[in-house]
Length: 264
Image 1: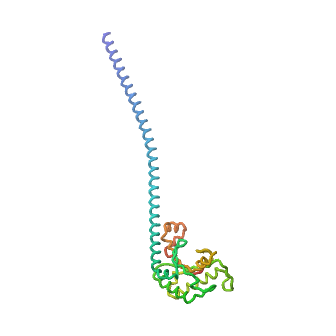
Image 2 (image 1 turned 135 degrees about the horizontal axis):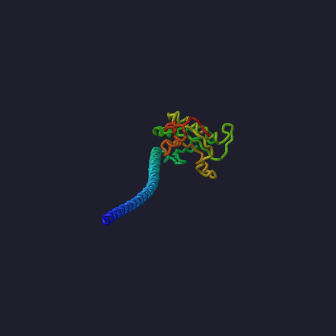
């Protein structure tokens, strides 16, 4: 009986020892698992941070690509506009070659505009705004050629040298330059030039192209310039500027419209 009791107690004790070991193993496994889960959470947090940085860098890269595409598009637009102006200059030079060779006029590119320059010494008597017979002939000849340049706007500009004039008719060089420009404009209109494609302006002596200290320079400054008004709607950024202005109504026609007035 005693032997059986000892055996039973031994079995119970053995059974208790096995359960404790299993429990400790399970507890160790749980601790290990919890550590692994914590490590996974840390890795996940680190990965999320890295993904956040990557998304930011991706956004920056996409922004840079868009800026580059925009810059390339603007550069291409400027290139096309430059090529267009060069083609227009060659066309104008070829059309007026005979008059240029005859010394009646010159073709220049000044202040971003192409212009035909005619010496007022040939067109007008000194101190006068009345065209000479030779002047009328020259203006009519120029008008005939300009009419062939379709859909272009022109501005007739009066220029003088810096020698002041002070008469009852012309109190200053501004009035003389303005009157001469108007005379040329009216002559062109009489020769059939469309009135909605031409305007006038007076620059007086404010834009010399020659040295006013020499007779040759002053002669060069006394001129009528017929400038081709550039079409602003073809310039890069025009649409954006149009939106920024808040009008939303500026178009190619308005951008190139030629006012029928004289500005001093």
